[in-house]
Image (cartoon, rainbow, N blue to C red; front, side, top):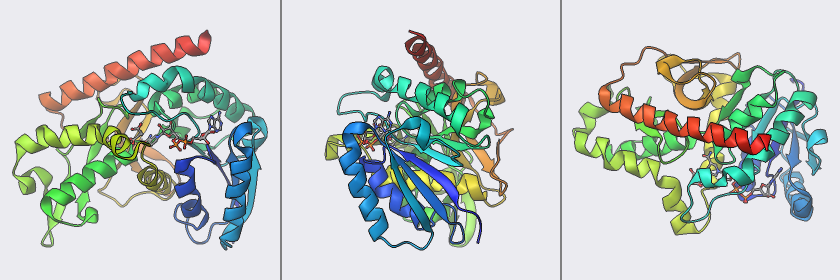
Length: 333
Ligand SMILES: NC(=O)C1=CN([C@@H]2O[C@H](COP(=O)(O)OP(=O)(O)OC[C@H]3O[C@@H](n4cnc5c(N)ncnc54)[C@H](O)[C@@H]3O)[C@@H](O)[C@H]2O)C=CC1
Ligand SMILES: O=C([O-])CC(=O)C(=O)O
C-alpha cells in the first residue's frame, strides 16, 4: 500500500466538516488504496467539539484511516500537509452577501498562507471553501510565495453541481447525463453559469444542452438566477448555509484534481488566472479546467464566448478585482 497522505481539514468542528470527514476518510477522494492521516484544525473554543468528532472518526473503524490528529495550533497543523481543505471561516446569514464576510474572514487566510509557506509540503494542494472563497484563496496564495500559485484553488464545484442538477431536472435525465456546464468567475451572486458548451446524453445520443432544453429564455434568465442565488435560498430555508452539498462538492473538486477527468470533459475550479479569456492575471477566477492524473490541471482554452457571456464574465471579474483590493487593504492594515 502507498504511504499515507496527510490531509488537513480546517473548520473541522463545523457543519461542512461533519459531512466531509467521513467521505474523505473512507476513500471517496483519494481512492480505496490510499491510506490517510487526517489533521483536524479548529479554534481553541471548539476543542471540546473537535474531540467529539475525533471519537466518532475513530468509531467508524475505517480501513484507510491511519490516524486522526486534532489541533488548535495552526503552525503545527500545517506541518508536512499534502492536501488542505480550508473550510474554517465564518458562514453568512440571511440577507448577507458572501463578500460581507471579507473583513471577518480574510485575515484567517493570510495567517494560513503564512503557515502553508513555512510548514506544508512544497507541492501541497489547497482548496479554499470559507467565504468569500475566491478572494480568501487569493490572499492565501499571496502569503505563501514559496508555493506554486497553481496549487491554490477555490471551490465553485457546488455551483457547477447546482447547474448540472437544474438542467438534469428540467430534462428529466440523470445528473450524470449532463456534462461540461461551466461556472465563470466568483463564487458569488455575480457568477456566470454557462451552458453554451454543455452536452447531455439523451436516448444514447449526445446533444448540446441548448438544443435539448429548447428554452433559451429559461436558460438565459431563471436558470442563471437560480444557480446564482441557490446558496441564499438554502440559508433562507435552513437558517444555516449549505453543508451536505458543500461537502459533496469538496469531495468532487479534490477527487477530480487528484485523479483527472476523462478526455473531452472538464470541470469548474476557481484557479489563478493566467490571462485566459482576458481575465486579470492572478485573480482566483472560476474557469473550466481539464484535470490530469498527475494532480495538475490546465485551463480549457479557446471556447467560443458570445457577447452575452462576455458581459457576464466581465461583471464577475470586476467584482473579484474590487474584492481583491478590499482584501489587500484589510491584510495590510
Ligand atoms: N465555497 C462554497 O461553495 C461554500 C462555502 N461555504 C463557506 O464555508 C465556511 C464554513 O461553513 P460551515 O462549516 O457551515 O460553518 P460553521 O460555522 O459550521 O463551521 C466553521 C468552523 O470553522 C471554525 N473556524 C473559524 N475560524 C477558524 C480558524 N481560524 N481556523 C480553523 N477553524 C476555524 C469555527 O470554529 C467552526 O467550527 C463558511 O465561510 C461558509 O460560508 C459554505 C458552503 C459552500
Ligand atoms: O451561500 C453561502 O453563504 C454558502 C455558500 O457559499 C453556498 O451555499 O454556495
